[in-house]
Image (cartoon, rainbow, N blue to C red):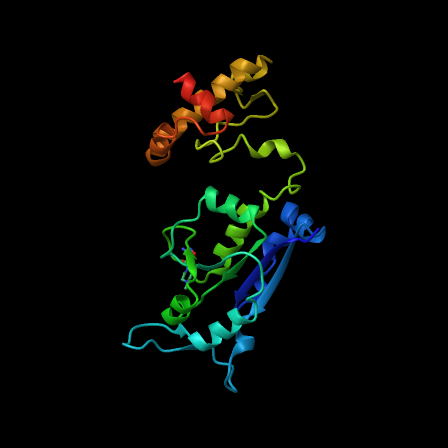
Length: 245
Ligand code: 4HQ
């Protein structure tokens, strides 16, 4: 089987696989469930000093990555499967739906910027989609790229040891996770909720749903509103939740 293909264009290829080389993602990389190719953007520099950036037209702080260099790097990976995404706070924020969509495809190419970013013309010419990890500023796109990859990789069929743990968690239902407990049943004077020790699976399911709904309503009104508006068409947990309200 051909691996799910991750291609990363970066000035710091040594950052990869980084944490993605460990744990489940590392195992999946080693067993060929996914493949990782890094492209050093500096290899496409055209002058003797291997310059990749220059000062911004119009003035202002910092440096901008040159369009000719970035374009040549992108041209070298044109045949890779999946969309090309530029990690940038200007894009729509990454969510579970995009992670799942990417995981369902054949791979992704991720363009990582440094400095103030990339000359707009190369993004326009190639109609590159931007995706943000969130409303904060990173030093470069690499850590965002790793987070994006992690979120998709764990959805690849065969990634999980225990496949079950995927579907009950946050965002597949549209709810935040219910609280989790493990042994010891009593610790530091704190007891695990009795229902979880009861062995009554229907009561446990109802309790968890109630907790997940309360936490979502209290902490994330935005998610709660979307959840309440999603009657039908959802998964079993969500449908159960709708009828339980
Ligand atoms: N940056 N989500 C600026 C980010 C970022 C984010 C990456 C900083 C791109 C040029 N990327 N560079 N937030 O803050 O993805």
